[in-house]
Amino acid sequence: RRLGKLGTDPSASSSSPPPSPQKRTEAEQPWAIPRIIHQTWKTNDVPAKFEEAISSWRRLHLGWRFEFWDDARGSRFMHEHFPQYARAYDAMSGIKRADVIRIALLHVLGGVYADIDVEAVRSFDALLSAA
Image (cartoon, rainbow, N blue to C red; front, side, top):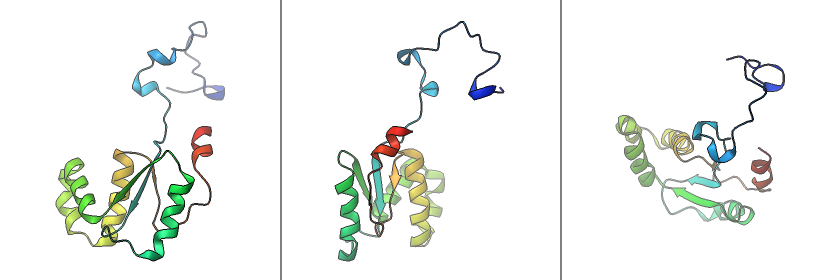
């Protein structure tokens, strides 16, 4: 279906009102990024040098859910949500697993991924509210 000027559908009747938000199907709902921050590390024992960066995300994103994924938890996630790829995932090197798990998490759960060595300097709340 082609859209006309400013994203309007030229074949749509202009006399019918748009559906009310309560009557929209899930596919018609505007998308939203869930307020979840995912971070990963090999184990639950994260080196102290990353504490400041990790805490910056929690400090600037009050009300967000934080999910920390070590290798074991990431493997369980892959076995549950992508069993067809789980064996290949488990056989990958650590850095490749980290690359794959972040994409899988965002695909299934949504949210934002932040490396543990990256410091948050501003909240994403204003950006997500504007989207």
